[in-house]
Each structure stands twice: as C-alpha cells, then as structure tokens.
Amino acid sequence: MRDFQKPGRSAVLASNGLCATSHPLAAKVALDVLQAGGNAADAAIAGAVLLGICEPQMTGIGGDCFVLLKPAGEERVIALNGSGPAPAGLSADALRARGLTAMPIHGIDAVTLPGAMDAFCRLSADWGRIGLAETLAPAIRYAEEGVPVAPRVAFDWGTDAAVLQGEARRHFLLNGKVPEVGQIFRAPGQAEVLRRVACEGRAGFYEGEVAEDMIASLNALGGPHTMDDLAGVRSFYTDPVAAPYKGAEVIEHPPNGQGATALLLLNILSHFDLPAMAPFGATRAHIEAEAAKLAYDARNRFLADPDHTARLAHMLAPETAARLAALINPRRASANPAALTEAVHKDTVYITVVDRDRMAVSLIYSIFWGFGAGLASTKFGINFQNRGAGFSLTQGHPNEAAGGKRPMHTIIPGMLAEGGHVTMPFGVMGGAYQPCGHARLVTNLRDYGMELQEAIDAPRGFTTPEGFTLERGYAPSVAAELADMGHTVREAEEPIGGAQAIVIHPSGVLEGGSDPRKDGCALGY
Image (cartoon, rainbow, N blue to C red; front, side, top):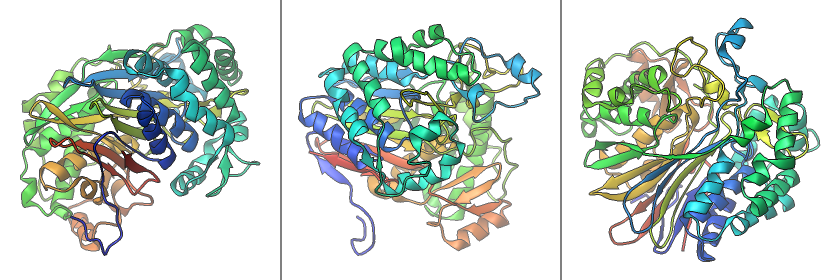
C-alpha cells in the first residue's frame, strides 16, 4: 500500500466496467459509452479516436493501430493488425540511388498508408454493439467544439511542432504558434471526416472526397501514393504470440509489431534471480539494459512485415534466450547496438477497456514520431504518419522498404493471463522503449510483488546507442554505479513512456492503473 502522506495516486476499483488511458476526456467518453450500453470494443474505439483530437501530436486518423481482444465469455485472445502498407510506388532502389542509406524520418518518403480507420470499422462491425455513428459521436463533438490543451500535451506539442510543414502548420498551430495549456484546439476538418465514416463506414475515409484530399495532398508533396493504394488498405486478424513468465503467460501482438521483442527480453530475464536484486538498484537496471540490447539486436535482424518474418520461432525459442543470457556480464556493460531511425521517438497513445461482460480490449494507436511526417492533407487536416521510417534500406533485409509492404512497428498492445484466464490487458507507450516497458511492468508485478499502480509509478531507465537514460526516480548512487560498470549514463530530459493497465481480479473486481507521467487516468463504474 502506498504512503498516503506522499504524492501519488491510488488505483481505481470498479465492478462493472473500467477504462485506463492517457487523457481524462477519452477515459470519460469510454466510460460513457459503456454506461450507455456499448461494450469494450465500442468504448475503446470511441476513446481512441478522441485521443487523436486530445493528443494530436501522438496519434490521429492518418495513423495505424494494433488490437488485442478477449471476447466476452471466452478466454481466447484475438489480434487485429491495423497497420497500413507502403504505397506501391515506394522503391528501396530508388531511395538508395538518391544516396540514402537509411529511411528519412520525416517528409513524404516516410508516409505509409493509414490503417487504423479500417481496423476501427472492422472492430466495430465484428465485435461492437452500438455501431459507428454512436461510437464516433463524442469525438465528432469534441473535434468540432474543441478540447483544452492538457499540460503534458502542451509539453510534447512544443517539442514536436518544429517538424510541421505547409498545411500541417495551419491545422496544428494556433495563429502560427504552439498552443499553451488551457487553450482550445479544434479540428473541424477531422470532425467532418468522422461524420462521413459514421454514415458510410470505411468508404467515407478510403474512397470519395476524403480519400481524394489525402492522395492529392500527398501527390502535391511528391508522393507516389494513389487512390488504388488507399482503397486497398485492409486490416486483418492474426494469432497473438505468447511466452510464460513466472507463472503467468505474456501475450503480445505478432509481427509486424515488435511484441516478440518483449517476449525475448522476458525469456532472457527469466535466467536471472531478479528478486535477489534491489528493485531500483544498479544491478537490476544493468541486467535489464544488457538483456534489452540483445533482444533489440534480434528484433533488428528478424522482425518485418508478417509475410517477410521468417525466424520468429527461433527468436522465441527458449534455447535462444538461454544462449543470449549467457552472454551477459553481470558486472560490465557490453557495446551499444547500432542506432535505428526509430530509436528515440516517444509518440503513441494507448487505451484499455474491460466491460461488465469481461470483454477486454488492449488497443494502441500512433502516427509514429511527434506529428508523424510533419505533413497534413489540405482540406481535412489529416496528419500523415511517418511509419515508413521503420523500414530498412539494407538490401535483402526482411524489413527492406518495398511497395505494398508493412514496416516493422514499435507499437505493441499486451495482455497477461494466469491459469488460462486473461487477468490484465496493458500497454506501455514510448516508441522503442515499449518492449522494455512491458518487461519492466511484468517483472515489477511478478518478481517484486508490486501493486499495479506502484508498478506503473516505479522509475524507469532505457539504454540506447546514445547512452543509458535514467529517470530522476533513481538515486544518484545508482547512476554512479552504472557508470562504473561501463554505461554512459544520462538523466532523462522527459519521462520515459507511459503505462495503462486493468487487472481483472478473481473476485470480479476491476483494478485500473494509469501512469502519472501522462495527463490521463483510470475511470470505472
């Protein structure tokens, strides 16, 4: 139990339904949908689409999503891949001929097709209860009337706004300036798009005037994107990947997401006696960092579009983790892995909802870096994602850029199961940090017996090619000890990641935890 004399927040307990997400308006809307007769799928869509208005630097309808869903009355978990492919005209050879050795992070070359909207439409049709018109109504109203800019959103907006170009500056700045805390942000163009989707389904987005606006805008910026590319975008169902950890099963979304990286990381950590290490000491931080280097190296070699990922079974095999664990020196840092274009980005939103019938939804939704490619459509202000920056330009690599191919994604929804029952949908935002965030949350719970909110609040560190970044929650002595081990230690300039989770207790009580690093909360009824 937390010390009530110190700053902090309690977990939220409820019996009928609960939502945890990174913005309070989205949590409230999800709860409203549940109380009005919608289920967890309806509520998750309603909250997620609104997050694109509340946190437009993080996500939007020009982006992608991944979903894990446990149906009501069942314990199976279904994965829905809502990531869009590259346009048919994308060519790695052409990019290399221009002298590029890595995909550009921003600009037209990085823009892949938006897959989230098709996934939302499919999720609503297959698993929802109330239909798109009712589900999208709150986001339409808020996009039209506006939302006050929240403190963490304002902080990130100021950091990310420099990438905005052309029409994106008109749609995502207020009189040419970054909005301040409490200023009202409106997106009337997006409200109109959502109205059309509410009436016409996916055709309201992938065909007609909205599609023409997107494609004409992309073509004017030099993109090869076509109406046929957009019309061909389809989400699809797939099977999750999973691995045991300390009596639980960790369930992740398969490639092209990086959920397998979290599983490999946990498999490596299972070879170490974490409970014998201080939870916030240097030894645990070091072992996690070294395991992460190895897991991410495997990710960079193997993960790609599902049609091009050939060594997933090898990556998840117990013997692979055992061999990698044996490479870790418990007292000395190894060399940092090679830098990737996605290594430092942080921008994603996550929402989880459990309803009274115990349908559970774990949904993550992103435009990749802050404000994506920095570009937007002219009429409706749809911010284009830069997910193509996740491709490789190495010839023959499984993740080599190509037309019609999906890039490796960083966003991963998760679930935990015990005894054959799903017990916790969860997610940890933070770009490349996400597999580390999943492993950190799971080990906080399983190895250290922390309560949910305590496990979310706990300090974080993340090793990248630039160094081992530590949040201020770590004692200075820990940083000094890690430096003695050979780590290049840096103080985090901003919070690392943001977690949301709901525990489904055997008693039937729901317990929601929400990261104080974000503006959001857990709400239940």
